[in-house]
Amino acid sequence: MSTGLVSQDTIVALATSPGANGAIAVIRLSGLQAITITNGVFKGKDLLSAPSHTIHFGTIRDGEELIDEVLVSLFKGPHSYTKEDVVEISTHNSTYIIERLIGLLIKKGARAAQAGEFTLRAFLNGGMDLSQAEAVADLIASENKASHEIAMNQMRGGISNKLQQMREQLINFTALLELELDFGEEDVEFADRAQFEALIQELKVHIVKLIQSFAYGNAIKHGVPVAIIGKPNAGKSTLLNTLLDEERAIVSDIAGTTRDTIEESINLEGITFRFIDTAGLRETADTIEAIGVTKAKEKVRQAKVLLYLYDDKDNTAEEVILQIKELYYEGLIVILVRNKIDLEGGYYPNDMDTAIKDALFPDYSDSLVGISAKDTNSVEGLKNILLDKIREMAIEDQHIITNTRHVEALQHALDALEQVEQGLDMQLPGDLLAHHVRGALRYISSITGDIDVDRDILGTIFGKFCIGK
Ligand SMILES: Nc1nc2c(ncn2[C@@H]2O[C@H](COP(=O)(O)OP(=O)(O)OP(=O)(O)O)[C@@H](O)[C@H]2O)c(=O)[nH]1
Ligand SMILES: [Mg+2]
Image 1: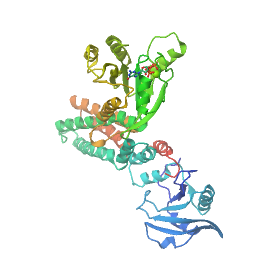
Image 2: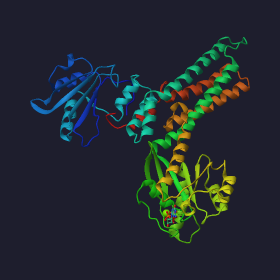
Image 3: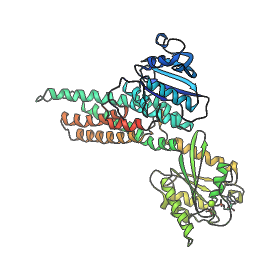
Image 4: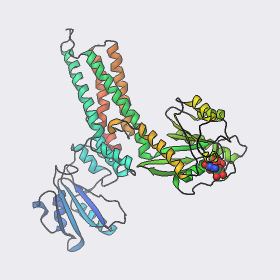
């Protein structure tokens, strides 16, 4: 797609979802001729003399032929989404009407918009920065409260403001470093090195936090994957059913009942969790079951949280410890779940729990809970632990990264800042330090689009939008 300078032409597209059943469809135009073109086919008030932010009832006609009765909303630039003149025509939601109307507007001089072109214009015209524009796509795609909150925060400039502050601080220092260069031979230091070092430290802390927030942001965006793991008959499928409040998985006292993985999502207090029931882990001669066991282990690798189920009849502490250590990888949240406590009349910590805690806390896990998977009330406690764990991942200030492009840029910025730090240690001259600082600046700026962003990058970002956005 063309991402050149802001073009002067007028674009048109259906802004509501095509083929949807709703009563109304909205067709949107943006550009210099948006109002003139609409006025040419609209019978009602003269739109050219109408003030901005007004709505007008009238008809759309192709010559003498009446196409629809419509409402036309006017937004004159720069007080519009794209900062250009924008017209939104609300029509009846008929595929025929929409096609005729868009066709007519194109005949009168508009051009069919490309994917994301309205938002691209908003960005190019300075209405929003790049990370805010990207958040528009996230906002439209958000399916739960938590991802909606993150996208909304980002669209309203959440991380941009933070990054902007960092940029300004760095720019100030680079200016001082560059001033030193002007004095060439003279041995002057305008940029206080100790202060500079403190600033770099501070920025690194912020960036690391933002990078870490990506794991959380990503989980929130796509649903937090939770693998339910344990030996056969541990009660994994029973737990899944209770969580879903539905007989989703087959439960039986035959070991090896579940073979394939079963995934279901539920929303707990605004956060989507993807629970994955798996085949019980054991050595088996049954080929199909063995495939299930391999698959279960793979699921753990893709999971954010591992619920490890065991009970004190069918497991030994050694087995549990060994299996957790085998399955564990850095960053995985492990919750140990001793099941079937109803058989003992409640949860009483025993020697097995003590042995497990001694071996696994705090390196592999820090939570152990007793439940009865059959019992909804008892599973409530487990849900709360899960929610707490996920919320712990969130960082303060709500600055959460959800975008792969952003996290990569931050990683590069961090590398560059580390080079500045090493440079300071080695007492490198100002010009070399300035070089690394500019590197960091470039990466930070690429997130908000404060530098000349590569056209390919813009094409990729806005190409992901739907037409009309
Ligand atoms: N008393 C009691 N029995 C339970 C509990 N949870 C599960 N069971 C029983 O344990 C047996 C195995 O339960 P499942 O949920 O099929 O176990 P699983 O871990 O999915 O087993 P596989 O699919 O074979 O790996 C069934 O007879 C369940 O009724 C519990 O909390 N209390
Ligand atoms: Mg099962």
